[in-house]
Image (cartoon, rainbow, N blue to C red; front, side):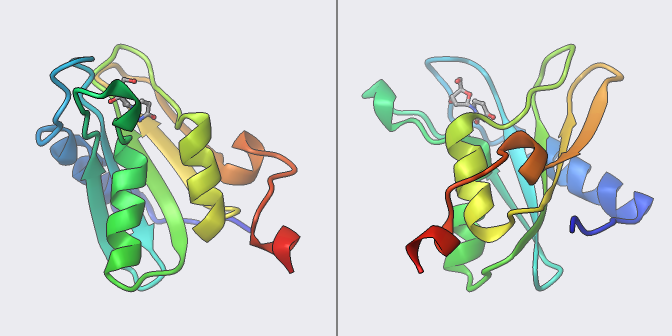
Length: 137
Ligand code: THU
């Protein structure tokens, strides 16, 4: 079951995602994305998209944040917030949904943008019947 976050914690996670977008390395798409992860320990990890002249190597903000959390020893993703500088919200791409599933199959997924739109859903709704660690047991 998705963890319920208090409103102040949601705001904190959303702000962390907005701040992370300022560090975006996106000279090709010019699409500056920020993400923040609430990890199992309660700590927040942030990430931004990191592009490459070899376009296929671009890494999304969500995956940057998760990889950073895992590298710090975390193994659980409770919630993900993603910010895009757009009038409407953006939800994580398919690759990021799969990576979130590995550590947070029921994680809360919040999307915020420059407009007033804000969405809150869960990873199992975004990636139903997911392939995951359980399939390899
Ligand atoms: N991007 C993200 O960082 N997260 C998403 O959820 C969607 C797409 C990035 C990848 C690439 O750097 C740019 O946005 C355009 O696709």
